[in-house]
Image (cartoon, rainbow, N blue to C red; front, top):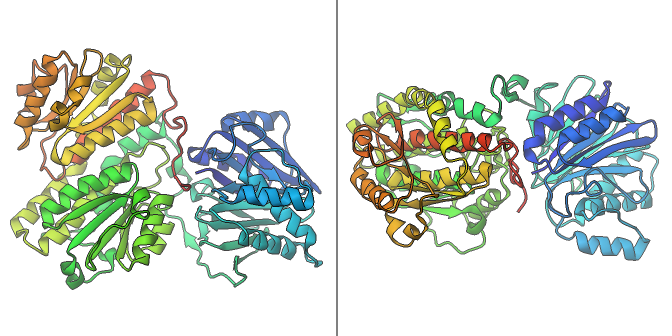
Length: 618
């Protein structure tokens, strides 16, 4: 969470920093600020609220200078106020710092600075404490090389820190120079011509350069206009590789769409196609996943699988549990990443763990990955960022190739995860009991998906009309069975995230075990009831809700429409598909329903309250 952008070069820094912040606003939008060095003075503009507020302030009082830092905040320590907005200064007012992460021992450090050197603080943040600590150490160090002193002061301060950080800082008296560091929060160095950049995410800087160095935990980078030097907090010289970013600035623009979320919903035919591109072996009726870095013998030895993630990724894992158990007859357990590393989960030596994260930087999922590897289990990643921490620290994995996802509410990453989990199930199944003909049918179903998704997307106007019918309700229930129970959970999550309505997802059969008490005329129920083996069971539950005057939105396929006519208030019909791929088709109408309801309610779809895209703090 939070977004950092730093720039040093020959251009005016203000427009570059502001543009970068706009591209990172999905990471946090409680407040924003910039600090730009002009001569030997740091010009600061910061305020609570959206980046538009900061842009207005900078228009009224334009800051000048060719290097500086900036930040968009998702609040952790301290209320959302102008005073708590970043950047923050040290005691001397010469060092400005922006920070993503949490300094867990900030209270003890603050007390120490107050007691020993009489520092006074103007904010409630942990970030200001870190700025004061670096400044205090800087003043105590000797040496004529002020750049080396600032790096060494940063290194010494970070050795005292407990917690996570991605930071960037400038000093008013050190010309054309930035310092950055990371531990647990992403930070990338953008390498340009006569200019260099720091950012939390490459999407902030791809308009200027597509050459990037993804910093590792405990890296410190010293950045000038035409040079940079990477070392570790421990003092060793850091190794690095300059990578070429796969996407450009055009890929992180909304284009003709009013919101990123809608754009990304409509990109799902392509993102699903890209998730399986080159991964289907039609001759052997199986999947090709070389990135797993496992031999066929090693895969056959797997006796149990654990899938772990958070939020939407966890819901994908729950679908994956049904998929892999059905296709490969392997026991699968799904673990909340936030719980996995804090409890003693019994696992055999032949357990294979998958950590699922769109960003590859989710703090809880990274913690689960590290705990799994610490205990000696082979741990693979499923992520969308090829240079992310999950990708680098796992033993192998599968990339989604979904392209940038800017909308805070995950959409295309979810369907890409479902496709990848289907491929994993197909691969493992074909190594066990799954027949050639069964494998061939699954491949046919996967290949048909992009076209079927395009058909579902044509329902957007119909779903918008349904959204208008229910825009005044106070909540919605979601129900599904088997593969589609996790889709009910995901549909409810999407509704909660962007409409702020009460929403719950449940297995359809649980209706009679207490949930039916909620049914009433002003609380609609969404039933995911494709024409499959459990359709009649779903129909029975729908009748129970109908008998109690509960409004029903039914999502169905095949002959389901005929049987639901006259029972459901509204019907959304999707193409008939094999059970294992149906969740990809059933979730998209629920994404659209949440989207259109949020728009009807006049809410900011891409910036839902209290949320940020990449959860890099615990």
